[in-house]
Image (cartoon, rainbow, N blue to C red; front, side, top):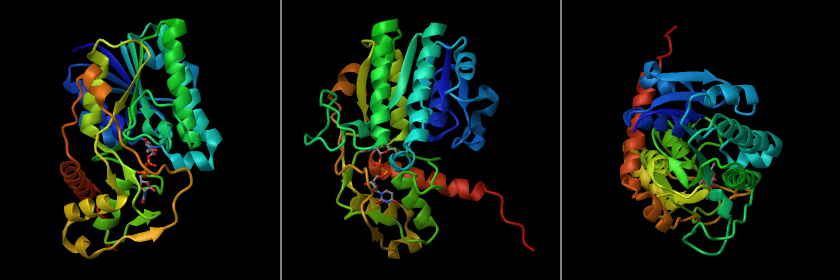
Length: 324
Ligand code: UD1
C-alpha cells in the first residue's frame, strides 16, 4: 500500500501505534494533534518520518490544511473518557462531535478516498443482548456515548449526502504500551499497571464483576489497515474487539501476575460504582471477520505482559531526579 494518510490524534496512545503501522505498510503519514493529551514522546521512534501538524480538529483552517493531499483520513482525535464527558459534556461535545463534523467536511471538500472513524463500544450502553452486534439498537448511557453515536451517524450522512466513503470502527476497550496512566480517567489496565509497579493498591469501582472486552492496540491497528484496504460499503459500521470478556476482578489478577514480585501481595481497594458505566460488554465479531477478514491475534495475558514491559521501559527512560 502507498499514498498519504492523515491521522488525527496521531500523538495519542492508539494514534501513535496506528502511525507506526501505516509507515510500516508504506504510507507517508501526517499527524494532526492539539497535544492536549497527545505527547511528542509517543512519536519519538518515528519522528523523522512523520509530518506533525499542531492544530485543532475543530478549526476549519487547521482541518483543511491537514487533509490536503491525503488519500486516507483516520479520525482518532477525541476526549476519550466516559467520566470526563459526564463532568463536562460541552467540552466533550466539542472534541468528540464538533471535531468530527469539521474533519468530515474538510475530507469531502478535499476529495479524500476514505475516512475511517474511531467509534466506541459505549454506544451499545446496557442493551440486554450479548455479544453486541452492530444491528442492535444503540442505547448510549453517557454524553461520551451519545457523542460517539452522533459522530457515527454523521459518517453515514456524509456517505449518503456527499459521497464521502466513510467507515466507523467501534473500538471496545483498547489497551497496550503508551496508554497514559496519569489521569484518573485513564483506561483501567494502564491504571492497574501503574499502581502495581508503584507498590500501590489499584481501585476497583463497584463489585468488580462488571465485564469488558479488552483488545490489544496492535489488533486495533490491524483492523484500521484492513478498513483502509478492503472493499466495503460506504457508511459501514464494524466492531473491533477481542471477542472475549473478563470481569474487572479477573483483569486485576491477570495484571498482578504479569507485574509479579512485590505486587503479588497487593489487594485491590473497592470504591463505589462510577456513574455512566455500563455493566457488561462483549463484541460479536461476525461482521469484522466477514467484511475485514479481521482476526484478533493477541490474548489478554500476552497483551498485558507486553504492556507491562512497555511501562517498565518507559519508566527506565524517564530522566532520573537529580540528587541534591
Ligand atoms: C468506555 C467504553 C470504551 C471507550 C472508553 C473511553 C464501554 C463498554 N466502553 O470504556 O469503548 O473507548 O470508555 O474512555 O462503555 N475501573 C476500575 N478501576 C479503575 C478504572 C476503571 O475498576 O481504576 C473499571 C470501570 O469502572 C469499568 C472498567 O474498569 O467498569 C473499565 O473502565 P475504563 O477503562 O475507564 O473503560 P470504560 O469506561 O469501560
